[in-house]
Image 1 (cartoon, rainbow, N blue to C red):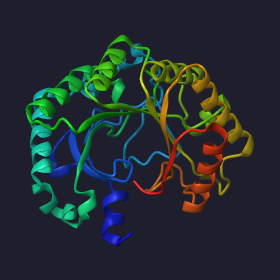
Image 2 (cartoon, one colour):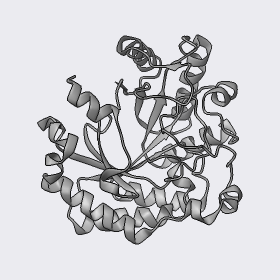
Image 3 (cartoon, one colour):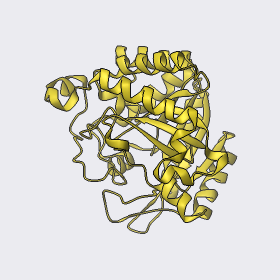
Image 4 (tube, rainbow, N blue to C red):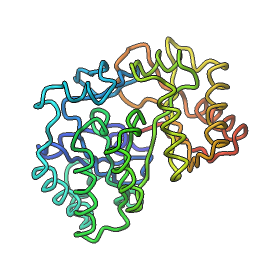
Length: 302
């Protein structure tokens, strides 16, 4: 990979052209351009992952429920929907016209990656924590339809902690109905390891139940970040527990479209977190694929 491409895929700034909510990035997992929607400009999140790669933001890991969200100051939560819609129209128009690929570092984008793959709810925190999540889903679908970009799918990148909330469940249904996908995080196989890695008050079983339920209704993508803690990779017993979780989800009717294994690509919250090599990640991939029969892909960059 060239240095220019490394810069593109390993750096995901969320301040494109002074916009507040919408930012384009070149993503290896999207195999092209992904237009990000940041519903967490103040880093609102109910995880405090040891590998968090959001720079300079203070996480609010104490948030675990809808009541906690409601208790958060309004200024922390409120999204200006009119501004977000205008930014999305502009960014999507720049992308589909090709004009974006003449701007800044995007001019270095290789031709095979000059395709608009998705509009991704990602950003600096957990997008489903926003009380306006369902409103923004509707805006994304409306703008995409009006611009005729029907092949640009909405993607929700989420930690799966709030699928049980009625408004979130409804919004995810709209995403899937419009041809989009749910990419749900699953970093562990056991409660203790989950607490160690994701550092959240949300019970691990809630996440497993939510993923199983969502995958029972529509195929989903699972995202798992593997890394070294204090120079030690994922323990064998934890890997086995993780594989068992995947098997159980499938046995209970969950449709796992793909497992995306990736590792850290930027500076992390804890200095003792380190990335796996491509070879190490590949070995995990082969193991999981062999044990579960699922499709597994690996990504060492952004």
